[in-house]
Image (cartoon, rainbow, N blue to C red; front, side, top):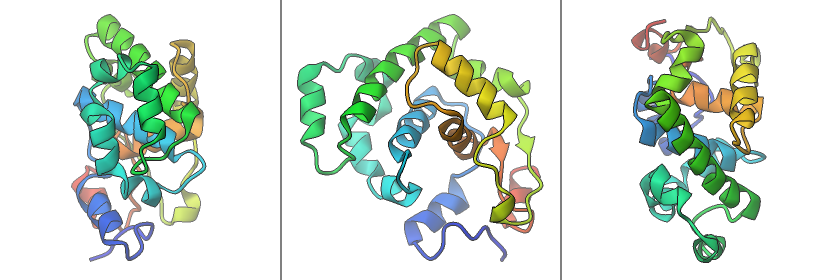
Length: 187
């Protein structure tokens, strides 16, 4: 069975690729999880974040945006002492800021899901990539969404980070053409 090469031989990365990456997301809690985790990935590898994912889920109240929006200085200090997560104060604080902005989008659009999918008219963008070398770090779509999120008060949502969560959440099918998941996901 042919697959994308990026998971390498890491069992957790392989499972993530084979069962989750690129599945179209329509659940706001999962959207918030991807936004938070991809912000923590900035400057690091996805493997590092993925191996700490369960710790992040526990530390960030299963990525409940209402709970995270209520985090106070005591909670931020507690997170800074948590060795199970990436202890970057700017990224931790941005998660709280982003939770508050996320809730405002939910109020305005009914859900974050309705907001984000409007950028593609509810359709998955099907890439036609033959190799990882062809995979972009960002696109015009991620540029537009990044700009809109920044205007709405989000932090750590540059175009590259946005593109990563669009890939993870299935707005973009960036599985390689030869990968078995490409066709499974409508390619």
